[in-house]
Length: 532
Image (tube, rainbow, N blue to C red):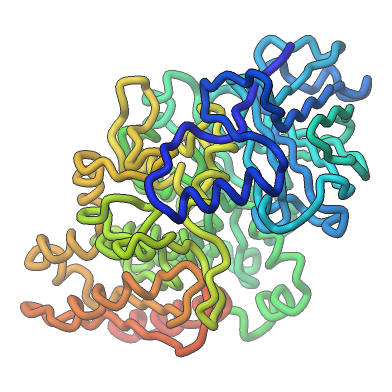
């Protein structure tokens, strides 16, 4: 079976910078670059052909439908996981009805395959040796695109030339990590009636619980509950990083350990991170969380089961989620600690104004829009790099099914498209923003929501919001939080008591400490007890 891949997307040259970039690419590669659908004729083209097999031990485990992702990294990157900065070439293609006892071929000449090249104009010669890393993300039951199990293969060296062929075998299974349970760590799985109805098939929610030191000694006692929402695509096995950390676990079980039930949520969703929100594409995750999973866990772990003793914390994606949960369910929780939240103002979605800008790739100065930076302001990679990388991950060849950051945003914030997939907020090739879809994102703009609903929501948020951000946030989260803070400080009837703080020269999530939040929850619970 063969797949075909265009060297470059069919994007017209729109300015001098683009044409110079493409000219450099062609000169460095000593090839003629043709747009999608072009005819090769007598022109030489970069051709990469990978023949893929499966080891006998894994043939029964590898499913017939999935997506190949092939990374060619410089030999100096050997041993490192494939990431945007290290990967010079990437090929991706779907396979259907694969007889895994036979070989499959992914070929850069096939139109259904995609390729992505980095640093092609950096003066490197094709005679360099490259490490080949193959990942196979197999389809599962259709309830998520970001599969928990994949298979990998690797060869130490590939000599990359204008025409390159090599063989690689899938010989290693990468299973999902597991929760390590003990007397104080328990794992819960619950079939969700709401999500199963939406999916049309059984759908399960998972969580892990870290029990306080006095839990087993006082079977009559009830406890406050703190829910930790993980960062992007985080899983409930994050509890392992705490229960397997001797310093934290000794403190947790010691005399200073707070008497709080600590729940670790799972962010698995159909298109990546579910953001714990109701959405047209993912289903009613917010309702399933608040109506099914949380009541179930609190009943099983002797939580109070009332909002007064229910709290949230999280960082990055988790930081946005805990804010949104507190704001959209203001009476259900009694406090949210948010660190470096994803954009809370969509006029500053990173550095993008989704309501006015024309493109997510180029800013209003016709310059590449950066996606990430160092704390010294040095851009690390662009929005265009990030989205092209996501396009490679997605079985649809777009970020809509990447299972990554913008795939998740798009699934939560966008309506369902005519093809059944989330409608794209911007074009995956040109980056051009679809104004109609961007308008649909407004309901998830937290600053805009509070501006419109402060008189009814504001009084119910008093004493419940603590937000921190570094002023040199890697992902520009501080840029959105500044106008959010300005709004909060302008509020009247009531004047908000939300605590928002910034640290100069600090990066993404630099100040996040789950231990600190646990102690703050314990302090607040102590004050609540004193008020009774």
